[in-house]
Image 1 (cartoon, rainbow, N blue to C red):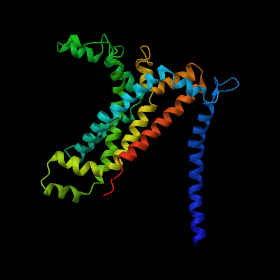
Image 2 (cartoon, helix red, strand yellow):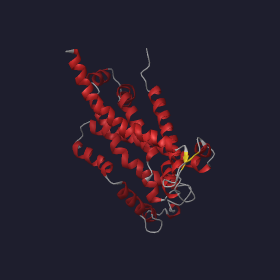
Image 3 (cartoon, rainbow, N blue to C red):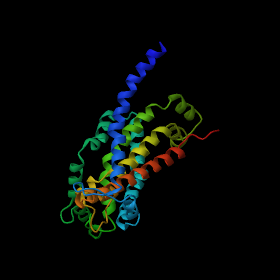
Image 4 (cartoon, rainbow, N blue to C red):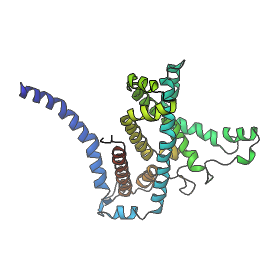
Length: 289
């Protein structure tokens, strides 16, 4: 009986394990292996060992792109997840039409990044864009600018489509978490006389600890792997002003045909995300009483 159960477990585990090894571990190992070579993807590989990584850590454009990516992570932490939470909490209150609102909030997530980038390019267009036209309409002509070329606004402007696009995803994850919060816990807090803010801070958020970890890890990993918004809106310009690690990796690997160097950037990005994940899990672990 025990042997039969073990065979059944093995039959379920082995296909999943093989799938994981082939589609995840194998590409990671292959990427790391290629990062040790000077290779254009066609010619014979030239073994460099860690030279690509040494060059990477002295590359000012990489540091610029990494700083810009950290700015995207910052927006995830202070804009995307908080707005997603409050939208989730709003529909959690079962306001009138909450099912319709839940669908509307999620629509940006299933919208193509190309369509989102095109829409925002119309908004930011310097001469006839919606944003500048609106500012002129209300008499704030002095605030109009070329949003995607101005050094003061370019990075924020190119980041907003990403932030807006994934707010709905955070909302759905947090809404699912809110539904798992015991009603008895909330009712007990209300009987103790807590106000709405105290209920969120001291009752609901601690109950969503594991869900918040998921949101943080997803948000940070999405921030590091995004490149389509930057590529479509600014192509990393002007003069690498809006370059992020995703676009820099893409350009080095495909535009500059430095496949090995591009792989080194990819491995470095993966390492940074893993460190972020470990720190988040450490910080949000329940404290032993």
